Length: 363
Image (cartoon, rainbow, N blue to C red):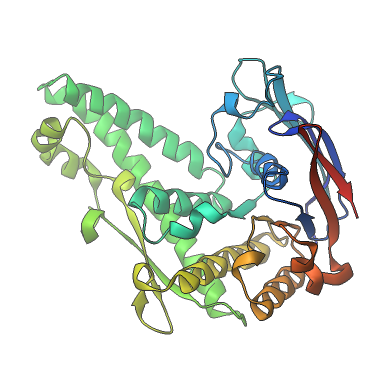
């Protein structure tokens, strides 16, 4: 299966890359080189071709190459169909996006490219706070529902306004009613989007022959509580408690993602480190399979140092699944040998540091 892929990627004054250009042919991409050479920076650049702050969640001014500080630019061209995508920030200004030469909001990128990523920082997903799992769930949900980001923004804006009322100890119910109604409408859509994403992942896992374990996923409230079906009356009833806390304590911003290793019936947070990593890879692959089934084209995958955490058989199985999907996966590793089982199914590049900057060479 083939589909929309990047044909060129150009970086200017981005992180460690003063200037770099990769010509891509749609195959998976193996990026090898020592730690600190700038491999992950390439993946981060691609992640910024989707809404949000990318795989490192960096502030805009952190992305410019030091000490130049003249701004940065990422440009990519896609094939089948062609699009010219740019995201950039000029010295000290906010990030901007252009699609086919025209200014566009970031959320518009999600309607062109679907990008999934797995980075070492996510290895703690199952044992960290619920916030990280919500981000993971919402990135997954966004891949199925490009308007999800806009609904979340609507909800968060109304919640911020309500929180200001709470902090100011405003007692008049009329000030709250409109905001709580708006929050409830957005919350219902957020929850529906998230549940749809979980259903698509479940179906993609159930129908797959894979070397990676399946996970049973569910959406729960804080501390395992049930989420209210209708948020508006729940918010109204909870105003006094929220006022004491100075913030909204109910809603989809407090939801959590629960996961159970299906074959063992073990909660993910009680699994071994290796099992937790395998579950993460399984979910990324399931997400990719589901998108390929829905859209007729697989997403772009960004897999940072993923091979280093897998034995030889699991690495080969991962590469086979990526190639069977027809996905353009950009993968990093310290040694070219980590990608040997890909053979000529992938493009290979080396990334090295020369003269204080990163240099990318196709091999």
